[in-house]
Image (cartoon, rainbow, N blue to C red):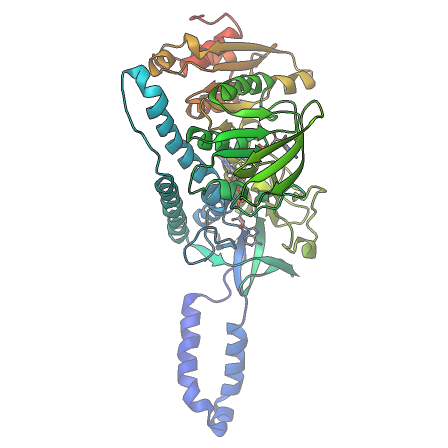
Length: 522
Ligand code: FAD
Ligand code: NAD
């Protein structure tokens, strides 16, 4: 492990020597006698030495900032560099990456505000509560969201200081290898024994549809509207399409989602995707599935005209006030200088890594959205912890089979492990057990009985292979299922664990029982 080139004590000594030396160096004779020329040359070259680190983490998003904190905990001399200011008032690079600044946290804040609004307006009556004249102050909702983001960004800077992470601001470009280290240009060049590439991803763009983040937006613009658009069109019925479509529909937008595939949420279990299509349509989201977008015209009145062919091939047009493009994300590897050290990049732009996030170059790792696997904040974090533990000589690992996914609509969708279609494709013999929330007492009390739990278990060993939940609290319930898969539990194990009554998560037990001896309450 490389130690720092110059510690604080040495730097202070150089400062003292320089301050003593300056009055003398003007006297050439004395300079020669005292060998000050030699001394000053040496000191200058010493102060120009690159700052050195055990590890340099490029990107302060979910993966990079957590990796840096873990490195600090492990006693590594670590620096983390970030380039993007996001909404920082001073325009300085801000930590937190996509998730904190324009992703998970702001979207969940808006989902929460809009759900409160909808509950008061539409669902409180069923509880006997009558509220008249409810309005939404959109700028106040956006300010609340911004304040949460600012607070959390400050929290990361505090955690960096607490864990001795050197936070560097600027765009990092890898310059090349020098001996057993790597030189990286930021504002000043730095040198590190290990690199962790955590540069994340950016929204995928569609040809002919230029994003301005005012009228034609990606996720960043769609999280910052200052008024409710009357007509909102979204391209892509994936996770962002459904989450942000829900936010603005709840506040009053007429939302149309245009999806290329014949079903929405292609990453989900097909039965879950079908259920969500039914539930989201009932809430008022309009879907055009199997559609192909062909063009966008900007009208003089500020509206947009989107042209697409529908599932039957008929050309259609849709006029909207705002358009959101949410068709997936692409890894950020361009202009990073990875070619200078020979790091392999896939055809689709991802950094190639093994199961421990090692790249093709020794001592260079890559984590998070910039590598294979689901583009999820907790997956990036888990990889960051694993990589730092391995750099420190420990045996960190990630169980990729047990990473949960959640869609924060209402009801929420959550799953971990395999889908039914994946098990069928793999030729794995399985049993499915399902339990609806319409048979769950707590769901009835809460006034929302939509959705179900589905447990998939190996037909021979009873090992839990996948759990899929559609429910208001699916995001909290999925933890039990992730633990079951991590510990290789059998469905019978879940069935025998005491589940408190009345709770929503009793439905997980019932679905587990339904794979074998049968549910008790159905
Ligand atoms: P990022 O968070 O993208 O961070 C990478 C950082 O590296 C960026 O800040 C970038 O500026 C910086 N960088 C890039 N190049 C350089 C360079 N050369 N020099 C210096 N810095 C550089 N995931 C969830 O798990 N749950 C959710 O609820 C969720 N909601 C989301 C909602 C939205 C709208 C979006 C868009 C995403 C959401 N995600 C969610 C996904 C999640 O945001 C990402 O998976 C996560 O941010 C990936 O973390 P990362 O560290 O790999 O990359
Ligand atoms: P996505 O992959 O979830 O969905 C993209 C959708 O766009 C897909 O249904 C796809 O078929 C469709 N599509 C692609 N090209 C199209 C085209 N030309 N015309 C019409 N439809 C097209 O991507 P996203 O919603 O942009 O989100 C990006 C990523 O961010 C997600 O994959 C996820 O990893 C992450 N994210 C996670 C969460 C969460 O965890 N709750 C929330 C938001 C985003």
